[in-house]
Image 1 (tube, rainbow, N blue to C red):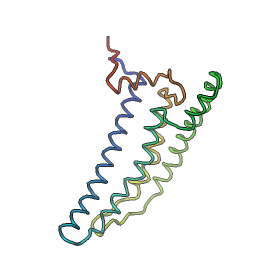
Image 2 (image 1 turned 45 degrees about the horizontal axis):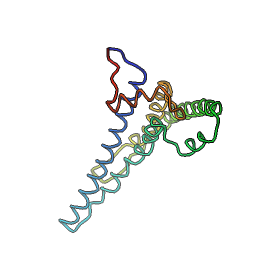
Image 3 (image 1 turned 45 degrees about the vertical axis):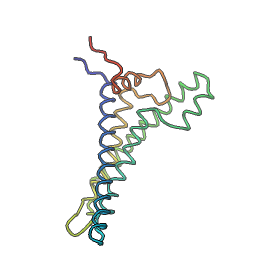
Image 4 (image 1 turned 30 degrees about the vertical axis):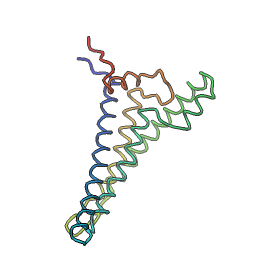
Length: 177
């Protein structure tokens, strides 16, 4: 069995997407439990809002990688239609370089941010979450973006190697002999 870079990127995208869905479900579960508790008892749980919002940085940052993998960027899509093929190719390379630089900066500064983060979020007296839970989202996002760049993700090119990965992820194509 061969393992292609596009298959790695597709699997990584599926994992990140599933993680984001789990985070949304966790936020909903926490919020609904606070709501039902209030309906049943008339008292509010003080920790539900604080706990649920700790997932927001993960959702916001990791969704960037999913959008990048799918080639979703409104401004870039609009520009592609206006440029000749050579301009699109040049824009692709500039964009890829900028995303690679951005992901490297996320990793570099994100690791420093993660390691220097020593605070504790006091959700309640019983629930204390290290700030590293939130700060870990920064370098993790950089690593996922960098992996997509290295695996050949092309935000601007419809005929990219990522089309194969998208087909593999959707189960539309199977390249096994």
